[in-house]
Image 1 (cartoon, one colour):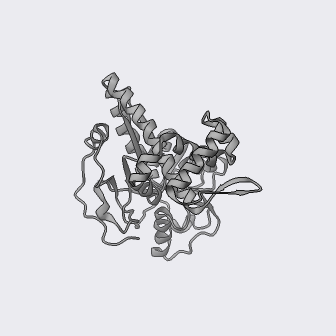
Image 2 (tube, rainbow, N blue to C red):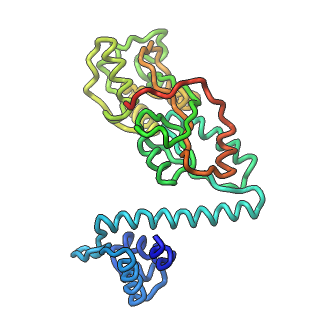
Image 3 (cartoon, rainbow, N blue to C red):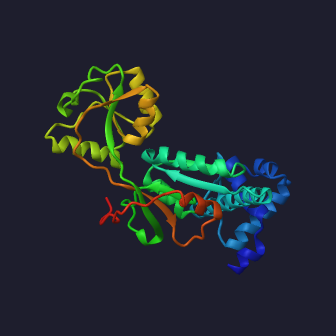
Length: 311
C-alpha cells in the first residue's frame, strides 16, 4: 500500500484508462497529452509498482489481463471521484451546490424524480446523476461507490448488514394496454381473457416477471408464450402504441404517468400477486454527503420488516 501510494500518480491512472479506451499506447499517450516514450515509461512504472503485467500485445492492440481489468476499473473510480470532487467543490464555493448520484428500479423512478426535483428547486447549482437499473446492478454500483443512494429491493442481496435500508413504498402492480385495446374501458377484465394476448414482460430472472408468472400460476392459467421482453417502460409504451393487442404488467406509479399522458389505459384486472416493497438504501460504511442527507430527509419510512430470505 505504501509503495502504491508513494509511486503512483493521477497521470498513471489516467493513462491506464486511456489505454483501455484506445487499445493503443500511442493513441493513449496523445489522449493524455504525453509523449509515447513518456507513456511507455509510465506504464512500466505502474507494472513495476504492482509487480504484474497489466496488458498483453495482440493483433488488435493492447488488451488488459485479468489483473489489468481490475486495476483499470479502480482507475476509473479514481477519475470519477476526482470529477465528483471538482463538482462538489464548485457547488460549495457557490454556496448552494453539491452532487448526488442516485439509482432507482423502474417502479421507483417517479418517486425519485419528485424528490430530486424538490431538491434541485432548493439547490439549483447542484449536479445530479440518476441511474435506472435492476436491484442487483444498483446495489453493485452502491458497493463500488458509484451511487450515494438507491431505491430498490434488497431481497436480492445476501449481505444486508452492509446497508442501511428504510422501506419507503409498497409497490402496487397494474395491467396496462393501449387505449385501442379491445378490453380498454371494460368494467372488469378477467386474466384468462388476456391469456391469448401478446404480453410485454421483463426477463425471466427479474422480480416483475416472477410476479406475472405467479399471477398466472395462482389463477391456474398457462403462462403466455408470445412475449416481448424489455426492462424499459418507454420501450413497453412504444410497443403498445404500435401494436394495440399488447398488454403489460407495470408498477402503478409508472403506469399512472403514461395513463395521465393518455398513451395507455389501466385494465380492470383483479391481481392477487403482491410485489415486494422497495427500500431507500445507503452503504453503511460510507459517510453521507450533506446533499445525500438532504435527499434522504425527504422520505417518510413505512413500518415494514426486512425480507427474511433472498429471492
